[in-house]
Image 1 (tube, one colour):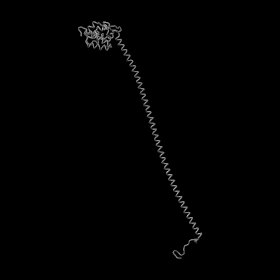
Image 2 (cartoon, rainbow over the protein chains, first blue to last red; image 1 turned 120 degrees about the vertical axis):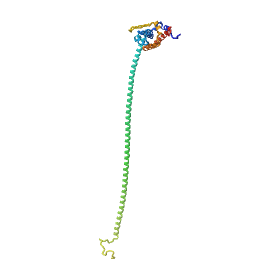
Image 3 (tube, chains in turn brown, purple; image 1 turned 60 degrees about the horizontal axis):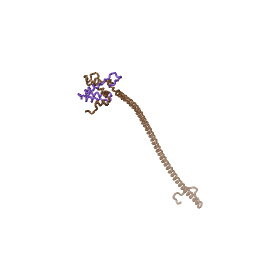
Image 4 (cartoon, each protein chain N blue to C red; image 1 turned 90 degrees about the horizontal axis):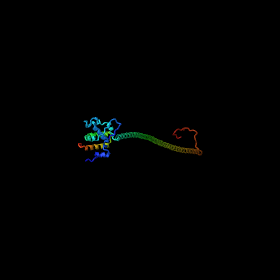
Length: 218
Length: 67
C-alpha cells in the first residue's frame, strides 16, 4: 500500500470530492487529454499536439478559484514594481556614484594643484636660499679681498715708513758727519789763524818761479 | 468546478472527474514532463504542480489495468 496521500485523502483535506479539479495543472492535463480539437490522445493525435493545442487562451481560462492567475498577475506586478524600484535605485545610486567620483576626482585634482604649488614654492625658497648663500659667499670673498688689500697697503706703508726713517737716519748721520767735518775745518782754520797770529811767517804776495831752476843748490 | 471567466472569449473546458480518472493513466511520462514544463513557463505555482502530480499518480496507481 502506498504511503502517500490517496485521492480520497486529498479530497478529504480539500473538503470537496472534486476540489482537485480546481488545480490549474490538472486543468492543463485535461486540455492535453482533450487535445483542443485535434482529437487528443484518444483521437489519433501525436505527442507534439500539446504545443499546438494548449493555447494561452486555454491557460487563461484555467482559473480555478481566480487566485492562481491573480497570483501570477500579482507576482508579475510585484516583479515589475521591484524592477522599477531597482531601476530607480540604480539610477540614483549611479548618479550618486558618478557625483562621488566627480567629487573625489575634484579633490584629487585640487590636491595635485596644491602639491604642485607647494613644490613650486619650495623650489622658489630653495633658489632664494641658494642665492643667499651665493651672496654671502661673495660678501665673504669681498671681505677677504679687502682684508688682503688692506694688509698689503699696511705692509707697504710700513715698509715705506721704515725706509723713510732709515733714510732720515742716514741723512741725520750725514748731517752729523758734515757738521763734524765743518767743525774740524773750522778748527783747522782757527788754528791756522791763531798760528799766524802768534807766529807769523812771510807770505809771498805772489808766486814766482825760482831763478835758479830746479835742482840748483842756490 | 471550473469558474468561468467571462472576460475571455474561448469557453473553458469543464473537467469530467470520471473521464479524467480513466484517461490520465494513459498519459505517457514524457507527456507529463512536457506538461510540467509548460505549466512552469505559464507561471503556475510549483505547489499546484506538485499537488496535481500527486493526484495524477494516485489515479494512475488506482487504475485496475494501468500502472
